[in-house]
Length: 165
Image 1 (cartoon, rainbow, N blue to C red):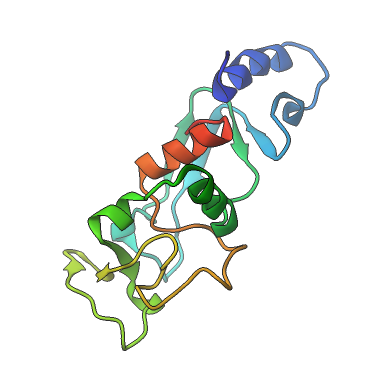
Image 2 (spheres, rainbow, N blue to C red; image 1 turned 60 degrees about the horizontal axis):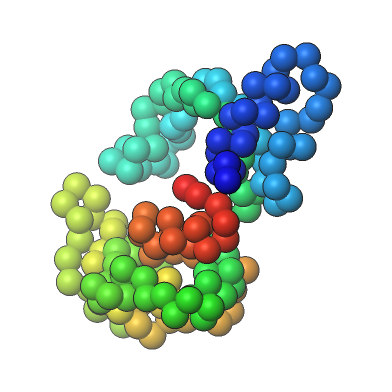
């Protein structure tokens, strides 16, 4: 079977060569076609975190077109994946994750911050279903994007969905 990204490359080449088909016709429902090309990435805004890669503004090139979900993965979708597969995320296994300082309350204990990115705090018990630490929950955040998901977690979620990173 051809992966979604491969399919977009093959069909994208056809689209470019005179066929009058909309690019999104190549992607499964809920996904958008991202063509090859270049764009500017970064921010010139005063409030930015340069150490997080938000600046400088730079040219980024996409070599091969691909399909991408139109929305972020929600807590509800990741919860369904976890319930269906009994998956335990890497943050749950190691017992902590980094939380943005502005997202934690004064009662939340943290161990340390990242060097040169002091606004990211190591919070024990933070994971996808406890986004701000052990006393938090996704109960009222089911339509919000899932957080504290590693590349490995995301790859397995995508595989479960029949997609890929």
